[in-house]
Length: 193
Image (cartoon, rainbow, N blue to C red):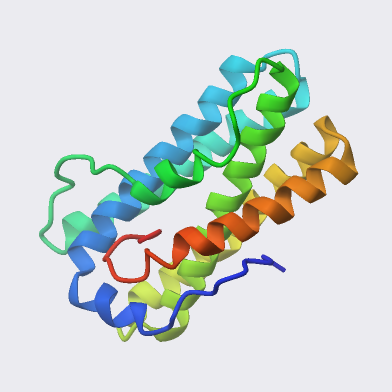
C-alpha cells in the first residue's frame, strides 16, 4: 500500500530498542512538526476550504499524538530536551525545484507530506511488530493506522489539486529519490533515521 521502494531493515529496531529515550524524543518532535505543517497548509492555502478543514483536524490530531508521546517520555523519567534537526526531511525537501507556480508548490508540498507520513507509518509498523516492549508495540500499532490515513489524505489532495497523471509521475520519482536517501538512514535512533 505504501509503495516505499526501500523498506526499513527490521534490524533497525535493535538500534531503536537500545535508544528508546532518543526514539521517543525524536518521535515527539516529528508529531510537533507534523502539526506545524498542517497549520502551514491552512494558513498558506486558505482558498481551499476542504484542505483547510482537513488540516485543522490534522493539526489537532498530531498535537494529541505529541501529547501521547510526551506522556510516555515523562512516565519513563525522560524529558523532551531540545529539538533536533531532521536530516531525512531536509534531504526530502530538496527533491522538488523551487517554483513560482503556487499550485505546483502546493502539490509538491502535499507529496512530500504524504511521503513523510508513509515512512512514519512504515517505521511504526516495524516497531509494532518487532519491539520487545509490549506497551510501545501496541502504541505504535495504533499510530501506524493514523499515519496511513494521513499518507492517503495528502496523496488524495495532491491528485485533487494537480493533474492526476503528472502527480502520479512525480510521486513515483519522489519514491525513487527517497529510496536513495534512505540508504543513508537505517543506522540512527530516529523515526526517519
